[in-house]
Image 1 (cartoon, helix red, strand yellow):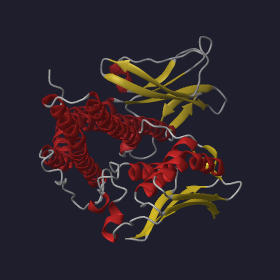
Image 2: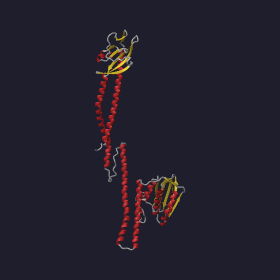
Image 3: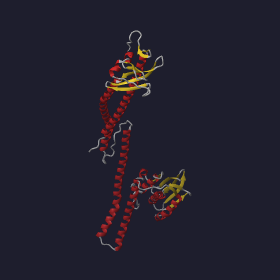
Image 4: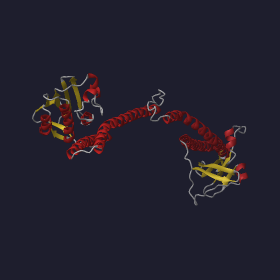
Length: 464
């Protein structure tokens, strides 16, 4: 079974909330109205008792109603004389009673010896409906107490409540229908931009990653969503572009050593040679295999670094000791090329980071300087503290870097034409990895260079 759509769920939720609010409002209004009618009924009984008490007389200690002049025509008195009675609470004898009480057959008497009389209100249910009565003590001149009991019918109040309830039963379904219709309409309007975003997103594929989702300009949450997706698509386009570049660069870098291996193997198979000749071929192939192994290792390292699989430690690193180790490691390489390699660094030079990765970054930069410095040149490494950073300068007297190539030298597999001499090994990953290491240490790497005079690289990492 297909789940309900978002528009349907929003409409149902809106209708349920509206129904709960309508029911809460209606029941609150109903109870408030009922309470007001109940209060009005109490006041009405009290007013009737007060109107009747004005005409109460005592003859021979017996309560009677006497009127001076014409019979009162006001409504309060007519209502008051409709349901009333006066009785003796001691004996329970009814002294006087209205015709309405007689017709109802009501004789509500409470003898004090059975239950003490209390002034107050009480309701009585009859075949003609519910009536509300009010008890009030009246005293004769001689001090004898009687009970004046005045009542009123609650039928008008009940009729009003019934009409209000019927109105609610009629208005409820209409209100729910209106709520559902308006909820569907508002959900549709609210989700139209989402639908546009979905349709635009469905058009995206690897062939048109430059396509972007529409932004309405309202600066609302949907615009924020579209902008977020556009930024994600931009990053995806960049990643796909890097993947294409990586694939093309890998194919280019792998093609040369593989072609060399195949060519030498074919020549060895076609021509019978001496053992020394076969050894020479195998030695050459081993060199090419070493290049491939190094290339694959560097690719794996770069891939792991950019995918977040490599973790960097955060602890004090003795940069002086690190540079001392590199001096011993690279001295042989520099001597083999006839290059002067010098290290100069301050004592107590400590940075915060991962010692192995920082060493790898410096090694890549110095190794790069040695590669591109001709015989008889020099490479100088200087370590110092500048402000809150440890700065390692690597200065060489090599072939230099053209101005238009400087912005690209930290890109993967970038090797300008001037650097592609056959006797210079490398695949263009060392500086890229060095930049990644410095960036993830909160530092940076920069370069100044002049063709024919050399280059000056600076590695900066936060000091401890």
